[in-house]
Length: 173
Ligand SMILES: CC(=O)SCCNC(=O)CCNC(=O)[C@H](O)C(C)(C)COP(=O)(O)OP(=O)(O)OC[C@H]1O[C@@H](n2cnc3c(N)ncnc32)[C@H](O)[C@@H]1OP(=O)(O)O
Image (tube, rainbow, N blue to C red; front, side, top):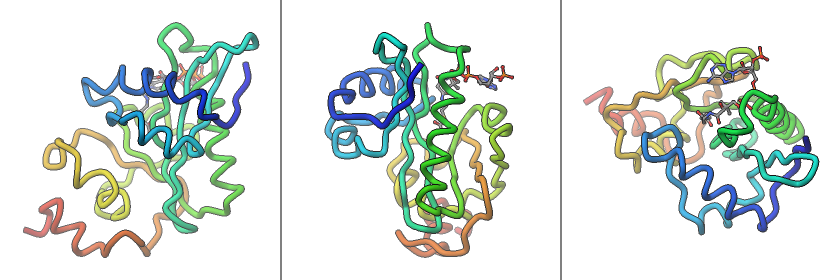
C-alpha cells in the first residue's frame, strides 16, 4: 500500500468516495470544483497495483491551527491499515508545517483517541472551524459531531473573533 499526496487526476475518485458518505452526514458534501481547488490538501492511499483505496485532507488555517478532514477508506479496503496510514501522513504534514494544534470534527472519536486527539467540549474554542464550515452547515444548531484537538487549542483565530462565533452558534444568545 502506498500513501502519497493527491494529484488532480485523483479528484474524481475523491469526489465519489467523499460524497458517497455525505447523505447521512458522515462527511461534509464537497463539490467537484472545491475538491479540485483544494487538491493539494489531500493525501490518498492506493494499493500496490495503483488502485485508489481512500483519502484524507489537511486544511491549514495558519501556524496556529490545521484541520484533518474527509478521512475515508473504501468499504472493501477497510481494516487493512489505510485509515491509520492516511491519518499519520496528515499529522506528519502538520508537523512539517510547524502547526501547533490539529483539530477535527467527527462522529467516531474512538478512532482518533489513539493518535493523541482529545475531545474539545466547547466547539466555540475553535472559531476558525465555525466560520469556515459550521455557519454554512444545515446541522449548525443540532450538530452531532464531536470536536477534537491534538495539541493545545490556540487562543487566536484568524477568520473572525471568538465572541462572534459564540453568537453564531447561539451559545450566548
Ligand atoms: C475528521 C474526519 O474525517 S471524521 C470522518 C471519519 N471517516 C468516516 O467516518 C468514514 C467511514 N469510515 C472509514 O472510512 C474507515 O472506517 C476509517 C477511515 C474510519 C478507518 O479506516 P480503516 O482503514 O478501516 O482503519 P485502519 O484499518 O487503519 O484501522 C486502524 C485502527 O483503528 C480502528 N478503527 C477503525 N475504524 C474505527 C472506528 N470507526 N472506531 C474506532 N476505531 C476504529 C481499527 O480497529 C484499527 O485498530 P487496531 O490498530 O487496534 O487494529
